[in-house]
Length: 146
Ligand code: ZN
Image 1 (cartoon, helix red, strand yellow):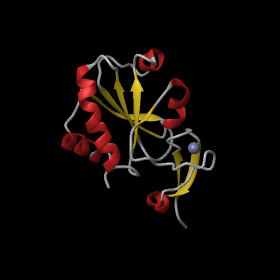
Image 2 (cartoon, helix red, strand yellow):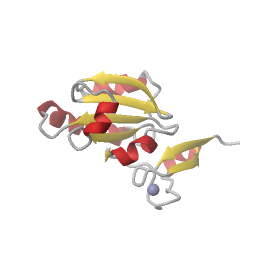
Image 3 (cartoon, rainbow, N blue to C red):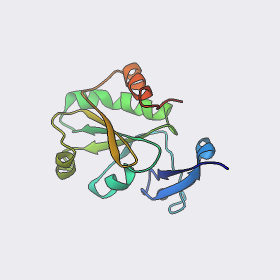
C-alpha cells in the first residue's frame, strides 16, 4: 500500500492527504483545486503559518523585511531553491515587518533568518543568507533533495 503524506496547499493552507509517490504528478488541492506544490516561494502570515508549518513535506521559512539589503539580495537564491526542490520542500516567506507578533513568537533576532519546519516543529535554524550551493547542501543534511 502506498504511504499517504500530509501536505498543506501552497495557496489556501488546507491540509491535503496524498500518496507519497504522487508528489511529482502535480496533485490538486481538495479545497481550492489549485496545485498543492508550486515552484516558487509563497507568503506566510499569522493566519496561515500554523497550518503551513505542518505536514510531512518540510517548510523552509525565509524571515525578511523590505528594508533589509541582505534579505533582498538573498530573495533570488531562495526562489531558485524553490524551483529546484518543488516537491521535496516548501518555501515560505515571512515579512517580519508585516507580522511582528509571529516573528516575536519565533524568536527572530536577526534577518535574514532561515527556519526549517517539519510536522509543525522547528528542526533547524540558520541565521544569515547562504549562497545557493550551501543552501542546498544545508537542506540535504535534513534529507531534503531531489
Ligand atoms: Zn488549496
